[in-house]
Image (cartoon, rainbow, N blue to C red; front, top):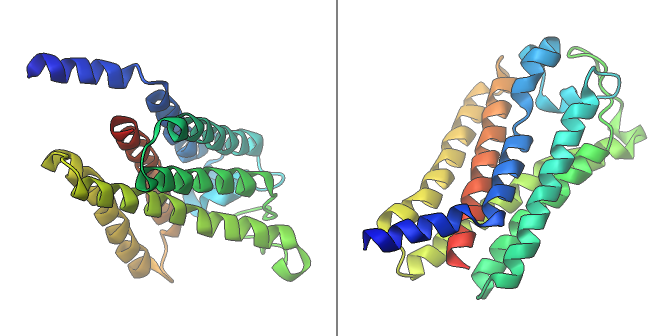
Length: 215
């Protein structure tokens, strides 16, 4: 039994989709670099402003998001060919939608010059609307992906520990939502968003890993 578990672990760590998931998760959470490269924005503004036009090193944060999305799309393409069953494939499609929307949001400029600046009127800048919609809708893909995985695991022979993993992620999303609601109209919204981004990265890793095991 122990030998079988060891072999399974070795096979998992040799799986390229796992490492693509790790790369995607790490690159998506590039916000800690903001404290080193653009502390004025990192301490007071939302993560999107690290990518704003004319912000220093905005190209790096944009590049990290694009590379994260591409790595996740590559993982999805590999897993799609190996997956069996509509739940797994729909879960892959959901996290692939997240990846595509992340790329869209990164490619569309965000016109806020400084943390305290007023952004371009969205009615006169459709690109701002596209950026906002992509940023808002993309996490829904991840949440759907995790929920579908949980449903599949509950219907299968998975162990309790494996089932608890996506459940813990969903609970974390809910708790962060409560914190975000509590912080509405208060300071610290950027810290809530950084926590939100971190949970998205965790969701990416959990989704890719569990699908890799189940596929």
